Length: 229
Length: 362
Image (cartoon, rainbow over all chains, first blue to last red; front, side):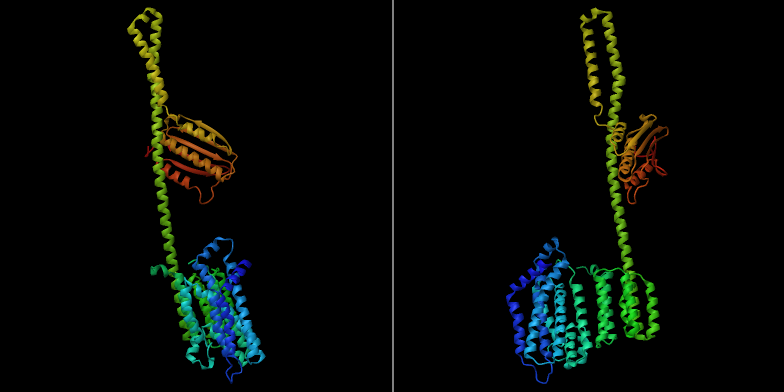
């Protein structure tokens, strides 16, 4: 497991452009001024959710590439278990994404203004959303044979998820009919959780966090099934 | 891709569950985080159980869990229905009673819930029937395949037997001819030669007679030729009793006692073939499945039957699933008008009885 973890990290480091962009986007995002009249940077955190959606997907491309190059068959023939392979990879992604959200979180504290409770609740919310996106990427890849097809469809799906889930605009502007559909999307619960933190409704915010983790487990359970093709 | 191969009860169950969860989502008030949390928890529990193919007992735990939740959140009653569908799918029809009981006790009758329960009941029940029918069809197909396989194997064995019996017949016929040549013709020729020698002793002048000399040398060469022919005709390959005794002497697993009675000349090649096969099978089974220390082989030919008895003092029965060789032997013996029986007391005894005049297959 440790070997897979280290190898996965090395492979991530080879994706230099991705790593640079992962840490560049929070800086660009932080430079956008907080809208006046808004007590918390919910929109900034929401758009950062979109960045996480793409970052997790770009990192997890190793898994679909291993399947595409038939490396997974060679791994299956080795003494390494599929469980260790997955844990090694997913924990490497979690580490890199964890650093990214920590970087963004620190920048947001420095440059944006919000009550301290918002930041304290914002970090676990970001973490649970990151866990969910990693598992979602794993789940997403199971439906595709090649990385190019997967990313082509994902680029549309992720934008839809962000728009319908309310990542890029305040949820209060979302029509009620759309909200009824949006509740099945995990992105909605991230945006909703951020709104609840702003309102100070921490019990429901905690429930949103749990819902995100429940989504993560469902995606992980389905996505962890070993596929060779 | 063939659509019928994709559409099986299991895949349809997934679709039914997705539809059911969609209906449940519309029915409950999912905008409430607590309600949506319960809904997603229900999805999570089902997904985990189906992904890891957990046993049916875990679905009962699920039902119990939801029954506890219902006490606090009555509206979560319908979240029990996916587990109910799965229980019905696995044929647990009685699960409808606790569901109905809780429905009337906690919720009370309403048309909306009735429709959802009906959907769950009908879909679960139908899928169960479909699954059962498909499983029965698969079982039947497997059974037919097995029968065809066994029949093929039996046919192959019969062909092999036929070939072996033909070989045995050739060998026994060659032996019979050699015996006849040796006993009858050899006896006569040797007698004639001895008579000629006696005549020569009585009348020594006959040695000078060319005709006498020619008769003598012809007779001598005939005797030599006959000896050579007898040796060449007699088969080098062992069969029959010889084979029988070889088999017994090569058995070293336990001490073996051999008894033989009656006129063995009455047996033909088919008898020898069957008896040898029975002995071989019995000794192999003793070696494989018993802890025998003493084996007795009793061979008796008494008109109108020949009987072979093999008795051992070890483990006295064959494990289940074995004995296909004996099953085949029994069928073969019965087709020839014989009987193969097993007796189990303090010993395990196998008795094969064959008529001396075989009905078929000679």
